[in-house]
Length: 408
Ligand SMILES: Cc1cc2nc3c(=O)[nH]c(=O)nc-3n(C[C@H](O)[C@H](O)[C@H](O)COP(=O)(O)O)c2cc1C
Ligand SMILES: O=C(O)C(=O)c1ccccc1
View (cartoon, rainbow, N blue to C red):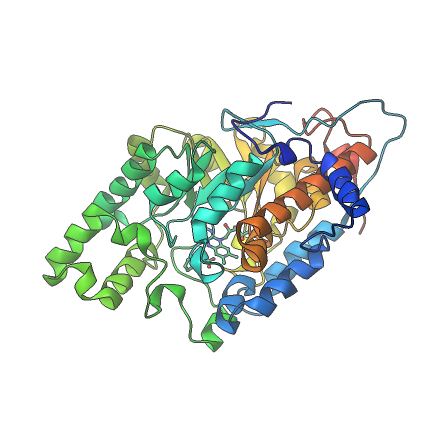
């Protein structure tokens, strides 16, 4: 197994985590958090203010997309093979030219300070300990440099909410900072140039960017080019009018209008590592991503938070994988809740998955420890489920469509 950099020993063999739990049980030590994945959300809900809970749990419109995402996983079943002789499952994979210990990446999630005071820094540290790449959101409550410091020698990616072209200098400045701070891949989110219709947030009249304490704007407020821009526009430093500055930053990163395919050239010119387009949902777009010369895509509907009534991301994955799976790295998110959901997404063509809400719930109920707990649970389940299904590795030669049956 290829392990990435320094990984906390208790993550080194996910299946062994179960033995650790039972040995502790013999000594009367009970686990601090539940392993019942269906309880992570309710535990977070108990702790969080109603508006923060509504924000993380919330979906677009009538919630159909999130329901579709979750239902789609249940329409596939794993078909285990017997008498397959191997010692350990090889969970390692190569994504975007990088060796990963596991086919798992933390999805970019904005404003983590809403869930725990440890915010992005606690998550970056948990990811480093787990040997799982961390992705920093443009809408973070920590700066690019602070999060990099917390992530230390862990692998980290930067997610871009991409301003329209009149703000190229700000885009370029973020890319420059991310590069200098050691972020190794750029995930460009294409599905959120404005926030979707979200009844939970609307009921609470709540936009995390526009709180009196303006906490999701740290990357903008620490950006020299944005600071100069704000001064020029208003004659003030951002500290002199924080609410105005937060509104301005929010309009720059959520401009209400998409860039076009031709604009990707700008990112290619100013980012020399791999570029991944997040939010791809059709075969033609996946093919255009290949033509555009990017290295990866994330098949994702933003966890059902943008377009209500959207097809499940898992339902579009097989066709996309068939069309471009040998030309580009396909990542997947939207609806991963347990280890066998990861098995299914990989079998249908993803090289790795991103997980969003589950780790945010972990952050809410247990800070850094809560995030580590969620990661251990997902990885332990993944490891044992593959072992018990007679699937020796996450490589396509072992884990593919033949491992699944469509149930209905
Ligand atoms: C509270 C919250 C905030 C998010 N913020 C971002 C973000 O800043 N950038 C981004 O690209 N995606 C963001 N996402 C979407 C996630 O990256 C990911 O696509 C989604 O959560 C995956 O679905 P899941 O929650 O079902 O795992 C956010 C999701 C949640 C739940
Ligand atoms: O909530 C989201 O999905 C999202 O992308 C976001 C992130 C930060 C602030 C507002 C929305």
